[in-house]
Amino acid sequence: HDYGLPMHAAKESGITLHAGAKRSMSDTVAEAEVLDAYSRAIINVVDTVGPAVVAINVRTTGGQGAGSGVFFAPDGYLLTNAHVVGDAEKVEVMLTDGRKLAATVVGTDPATDLAVCQVDNAQIKTPYADFGDSSTLKVGQLAIAIGNPLGFASSVSTGVVSALGRSIQGVGGRMIEDVIQTDVALNPGNSGGPLVSSGGKVIGINTAIISGAQGLSFSVPIKTANWVLQELLMHGRVRRPWLGVYCQVLPLAPQYRRTAVECLRAHKNVVQVVGMEPDGPAARAGVEVGDLVALVGGKVVQSVDDIYRAMSKPEGGPATKPFPLMVVRNGRVLDLQVPFMERPQPHQQGKAGRRLRLTQDDK
Image 1 (tube, rainbow, N blue to C red):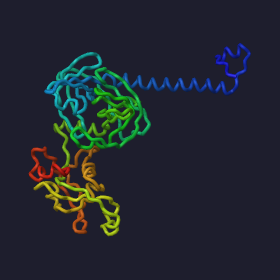
Image 2 (image 1 turned 90 degrees about the vertical axis):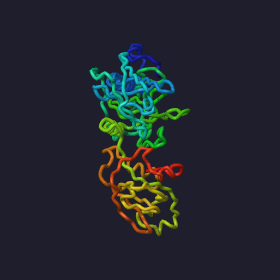
Image 3 (image 1 turned 30 degrees about the vertical axis):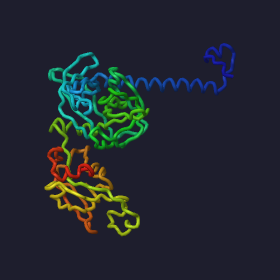
């Protein structure tokens, strides 16, 4: 029997322990060692990355707000969320040592909900975190969030990567692609803080939770964030290619797939061009109203969001060279080359865009 005695006490009492009891004690020791290793990993992450995480307080015309951020360079540059600082009139960051520093918004990218700020005092050297490689993440691996939830600075929560490649709708209505889903406990104020691997590398920027749900948190992968911050630092904005078409999605009935051109036979839906921006990229490439879009940049498209995804290139920035576009016109397949043109701001778009804005998503 297992009398609950330590090994040496059992021997002194003349009690013979079963092998099962010995294994149970061994398992307990092993579990304790695993827990110690888990704790050491988290403590190491907090010691390594924690000093680079800041609490952000902002003042806007509508009041005050708060969030988190993480320094990525010693000269005071930090990453956070666009929805945290996008409308800020004044930004103040508080370091873990209690120092409060004024900061300036360098640029924001609402399409990915990311922003870059820099502390105003350029003489101050700030602690900073190293970036990891979010493309190597595996479902189930440890994820650690550090931030400022509900005003509680330098709070740490842990969980695992629940899923990869998620899509969520950003503040501006655009879909944010390749998002990391975790079960890490996030609360208002965590926005903009880092998601960190057990190796102490930043793998994502925490951006969203689903209100009322538990264990559903989302982070923009650091691969995307790294591309965005480089664009913001170099150009003050994120340059994205633009197609300049307005489309509708039509179902392709099974009986028509057999007679469709080869590049459309696997499609359940087809994307049809219903309008174009005058002198836009598609118009210059020779696209016509009524064309069916089959491939953009070599990627199959069956929805308007597919076009957006095909033209988003976080791994190497926007294509500044012409990119291929395959369309079907009256049963003929046409391979076109679309010139790179940067997406204009909404007020720069022509009358066709304004006329179709209510019903069609412009790409």
